[in-house]
Image 1 (cartoon, rainbow, N blue to C red):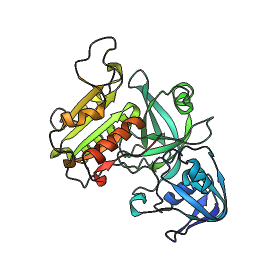
Image 2: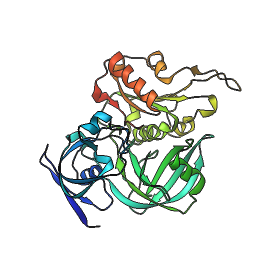
Image 3: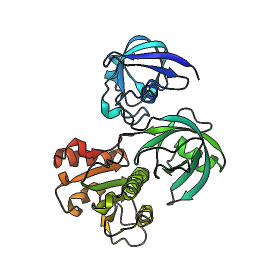
Image 4: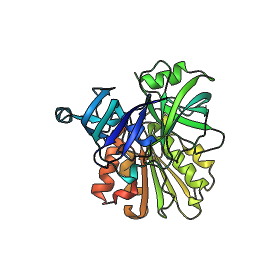
Length: 339
């Protein structure tokens, strides 16, 4: 692939090449430039920029990450734009966004599919190159017959077997999950680009860990739990793993945590069901998962390192609980905003 354009960011003076197929955001991150971002999918608005010179192509004009006010002010999303020739932009950047593992494009083939619940499956791919990523990160998948990439969190950890595991929930009218569940067969090829994401495991922290997952948000939280176990963090720290489910039939994750050892000792699994009045009995915790944090955690919230992933209403509620309700420092709160 040849370079199509050079992109210059006026805010930090950096310049980087954009190659075939890359958005402005992916080109920056691939070059080791820390442009602000989170979801990489057009939903969060974290990668807004202003175009100062040159022309761009917008891939998704209606992306929800831009408000009408943003559009009137001439703002764009770096994850949804490509440069047409050389351009100059003004985009926020910071060291925290510089990738610790540079993302790369590669081919991958579906190796195995495993059922987790009635609507969540784990899709295991083998890539043409290395499987190098941090626990809690995600990759962008280009699926056959689907325009645009889809972001899916990785549930395993970096490995020499070149395996990337993704736990995906079937979404009604979801084009990506439809292809994965109903069309993709073992042996089929996709394109994989990654890793991306800022909500990865902070191994330098000595605090106990709290993971909160809802739905297919299970994947990055399981990855973080696995990374913590493999890295020896649970030898002297405790992991409180909350899983929020609609019904008892949706509860999952315990078996994966038991495989890590120290279950019930350094690892505590706390499932919470929001609709307990389904068929059968449920004698566990009920209600919204974020409401149970204060009831279960034994110490002040500022004593923990928090990781969470799941539906936007859940992640928004947890943000408000931690930041507004308990004044937890932002540096101890780790999540990637999706929509």
